[in-house]
Length: 465
Image (cartoon, rainbow, N blue to C red):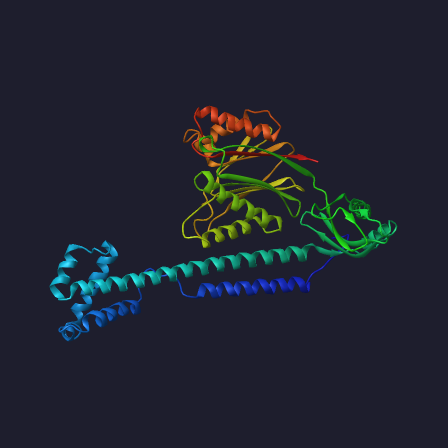
């Protein structure tokens, strides 16, 4: 970095590393506690027999004999009853009932107490396993968060640098505009793009447009910088921080087309376009389980959580994993949703396609169409999921087309990807909205029927600035 000096060994970065280490230790503690069980413990079985001995056999004239010299046969009978309950339910099987009636003069009460003991112990296992699953989910969340913190710490340490010459130049230029600078912080991402944070205020009561300050910072740095969208547009006599980022080389535009199952107004598919830190823009598409209002609620939840996490800088796979764990922990029944994401790097023109249970994605170039598929599971099914991802370099005028499974399922099995490739390749349109509507119309025309599932097409084009 010849224009400034990189900072290493920052105490703030070291503290973040310590936090991450502590989270990992907490995760290990969670996983080291009681594990999930599939069978009764010896203590639980002994408790069942003690219950029967006290409540049923205590006042029986044969108690001494059954639990004394004949205790082996008594225990075996109890085990036979437990085995039968586990396999046949409360009604048992005929052979076990016959043996019990022959050996025990209080057979109905013996059976009733054994059944109650069995169900109590089984309920205990259910709660133990539920707690174990929750602890495992918490451990996954802690590990995921620790990974994110370590990754962020490394990125932060590598990106912070000092440049006294540039700092003095910015301060001098802004002073001429009656702007007093309190702090200036410099960052550089992996692609060598600048991000400059300027904390400043006006020296007079009048306010000044933030873009005037950005223009001066750009002049000093010799780079085309733009104001971060979440910054104030005016600067007054109170100090405030403006984030000036180097402008991207690419921009995107998107278009969508959708229809609900049976032409319903409510669709279980949801989507969003979102601005992300680091000059990235994301397109996300989620298909909730089934169709209609419940599926819509599920996919809406997923999209809203993605927007929240990605907008604050969480890595894409980390965000998906955290949402997955949240959905698994938060309910008894399985409600899965697919996640289909394309993340565009507006500095380099590269895109990363990320999938969890989603349908194929198509990349339309000037002379060909590439389709990318995935075999991963949707989120909300199990704690650990595999998230597929692949990167592609895009060029000016390329399109990324994402679809939900309702679109592909409407086409003949075995020919779905090829037919959709042909439809995409056959259009010369350059408007993303027109492309999305054209694809959906062609698929509906092919089937000639009402949609058997929710169908959504999301087309995103990328162009050079």
